[in-house]
Length: 468
Image (cartoon, rainbow, N blue to C red; front, side, top):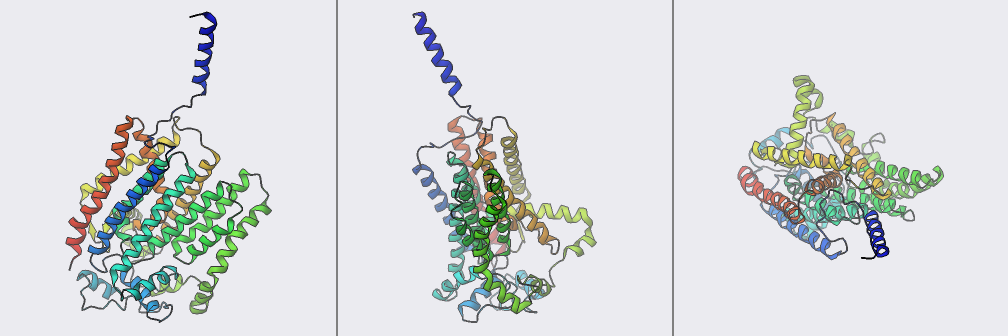
């Protein structure tokens, strides 16, 4: 080869090597330029979740989802034209509840006196009341409504992660699949309650705020509409007001905007939310007193039979309280069914503990690893957004447990999108060292295994232990 040609070839190879990006140690199992593939796989995840959810809804014995009778009675009051119920003394009967649970909710014992959810915001019950009327009060259609909400949550989880990592569709799919097949979450989305709708509105706000971080400051009112839905659904969703404030602060700092701009953006978000939800809070003020617009003080006074944290602390001390909280919260995040009475064998919790540890280690590796590519502003801001959501949810969980012993992992479910994305990043990082084909099958195998665990828990534990 002539010398000039050799020099030119060397220059082109050096230039090519310098221009090539460093490939991070992450599992990328999907073609980025094929949007139909992720959507098709998302549809498969939703169909699989829906099939398992319908099984849970149809086969879980009636009233054997936590607080299901009280939520049902709220729906019934609206559907039968009694208006919004009022939280009153006697709505929580601990002796009756214990008798019902111990005897498997026999039909001869009424559930009507259980009305301790009457303080809840109204949106879920307004949506459920037409289903009640249409099907004559049957429980299964109301449970299936929650399954539908669970499917919507998967779409919102996929959409939120896709906004933050638009070139990593596998992360959005892993996040949706992780949320879809947590056994306890499936069980809760197959019951009559407002939990899943609260998760849906939290997911909707997260998706809208992620889009807002990408430059959607001309539509802050849309965030305000979703915040109104959060305020009218469940107090666990109220954390999204704080997340919205954090998001505006991030945009202000990044764009070098004025505080006046930030106040204007917050006004567009919070004023519509407050105006739309104000009638409910005014009604509560008139009913329970203006010092209790949420009705929580009335609720806490009525549910006197519930175990208080101060009493538990006096008996077992801090070590006992914190140890029990950690153990029960972990168990009930993954699967502790019925009214917390159906506990899985230790070997299953050990396997789930190993899985949780591995995924957490993978996420920390991604977070601190040098193989992680530099993040864009949207990605860094989106991660902060999800971190804020997780942080506020966790604080809310501990705050609730300052009063009542409620070591239930389901109270962390409003943070499932950030938890799911952390799990997806951890899984992607750990499997990135594997060959591409093996990476794909390991990932598929994990989520198929979780779906199989859902079915196993239903037929091996829930039905045998809870059937009358």
